Amino acid sequence: MNEREENERPYKEIVSMDDLDKRILDLLTVDGRKSYRKISRELGVSVGTVHNRVDKLTKSGIINKFVPIVDHEKLGYNLTAIIGLELQGGTITYLVDKKPFKKNLLAVYDVTGQFDAILIAKFRDTFELNQFIKLLLKEEPVIKTYTQTVLNIIKEELNSSMIVLD
Image (tube, rainbow, N blue to C red):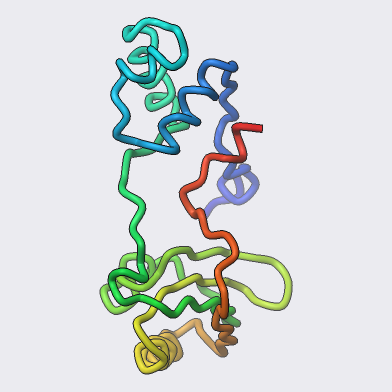
């Protein structure tokens, strides 16, 4: 990495939204399959306006994709773990796409503080979590793992757009 790349801010350009954009996004957040016609009726604007606004939100990167929100518990993934990693140099960004880790990982964060990275993952049981941790410890930059299991999920909306709707 050259000096210029190291000093560049990795932040994305901030895109502004007006009230109509926020209201459309709010409706799509609740039901991503809601038709433009229904949205236009609820908001009192034309279907073309809704289409153009959604297109603009998509092209600007505010809407990345339309995906289902999966109920992991119904698939047998009842155990949520928050895993702190202590690393010796290097990075763990490659783990995101590595087969033994990909199916369980919901989030990977490069952080400050006690840990170098935080993972949020779902598992069927403690055996599966144990296997995951053992595989993690075989990865070269990983020195230690610190695992907490979640007892009760109070709020979990990893795909939430609530931050922009205030």
